[in-house]
Length: 293
Image 1 (cartoon, rainbow, N blue to C red):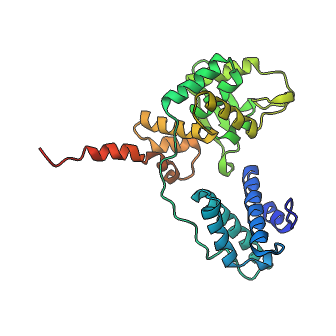
Image 2: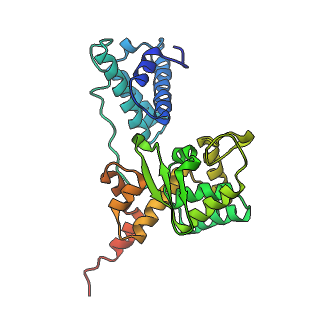
Image 3: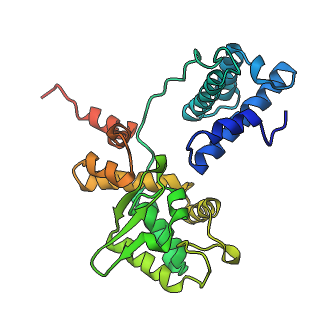
């Protein structure tokens, strides 16, 4: 099949109010499935020929052959279930082949945060290099917990800075929800320093890339990865958000309600992941269980 476009999929995406990142993820997962289908079955992909066995075998392929994470595998299953459900509602199919294929169970551990020493090295490296733009981006993730897409989408009007306080407005967060996040003095200083050297460009985005164009998510990921290498730790932007969440709970007596509001979580159950203990912490805790004198 044409891997660049599949009309029924595009119709499904067009009738749902998905964010651009979600649309991209849906397309990638669908292409992944169709490529596997054609390789495994030796025939051209067709929606009406997909069987429950195809879906379950694809699940096994992702997990056991490609060794993909449980969350990645489950996301692909959700994409297929919703897509084929759409085709059933449209009368294109009589049954959803993905309906009875269950998602994999996963044992949720705490999101991986970065050690304080590594964070210090990353921030110090940006300071030594006098990379005001980089320091502002890192600060928005480490002090305000913004996602990479939220940082890329920021416009000048979203910032409200003064000497004593400051906030950043996230207009298009996950689920298209808007929220305001307070900025600490460290974040305010980093952003103010960046704005003082921001090049004159026609667009209103806070961060600018090459050629005066808005800095996109790929550019931000590259920047974060580069500073991770300088600190001798492999990191991605979401790890900075995880680090902010972990540090916030540690400093604020496990204030889950406040953290959920800052991160833009609709359910506090999502935020509660950060209260889970690592296996190292649990090991130390069990060593303190004693029955002797």
